[in-house]
Image (cartoon, rainbow, N blue to C red; front, side):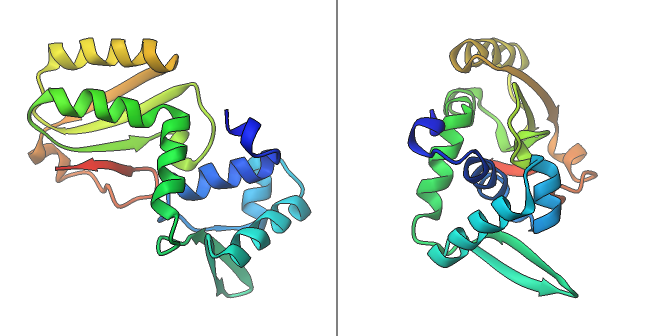
Length: 174
């Protein structure tokens, strides 16, 4: 669907990569390698985003690191569109609202890195009703037409996991 609104595939990849995981920082060559695109096409899109205020950069040594500008006035709206595009918003709305004792929901896997994926990987922290969770996951899979894999950790178990790492993206918090 985004392809109908945004003609540049590189621009779409950058939006997904930077706005779905806004805390992550990336450099030009790393993004070009990850997307299998030329550095010139990635540089052009990053420059446009930076001029618009959507992306901020910092020099670390001789590398320029880019990340989403969370103070950009439309940051929440752009991120919301991307969450809806990937199907994540409907998962969150359906599952969390009816599960009961869920404290946090994290996205992990390829989507957390801003890459396209047919699998949505979620981590739930709390004590949800497991049978109900399984039923809701099956319904959400049919709705978004993607496979959903998930893990459930109690609050005590979650203390042993470093969710601050880039591979975990906080989607919902009580």
